[in-house]
Length: 118
Ligand SMILES: [Zn+2]
Image (cartoon, rainbow, N blue to C red):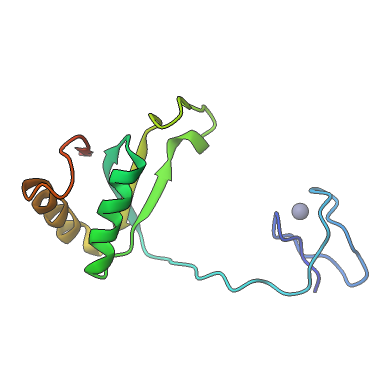
């Protein structure tokens, strides 16, 4: 089945272009690794480098992180690098993640500029 790589709509054989997106249809779905776990946003920060470092620290411990840039929201708060970013981890890893971030702050691995949510 051809499908649209942009919106994911499936089309009947023979159709070449997505009617909604005006994008050429492709034949095979790419392998998306869908993580169905419940991710909780727990830390917010304005510094992308900083969040990247935290993300690395958590990844080393086997915790998957997602970073949401609030610039991609419907109401952009885009002021370059000062846009707010939020870090989330799977619910089951939340406690461990909070502990690791706090430790990293105490150890001076990351700055204390971010904020825990809740
Ligand atoms: Zn489409």
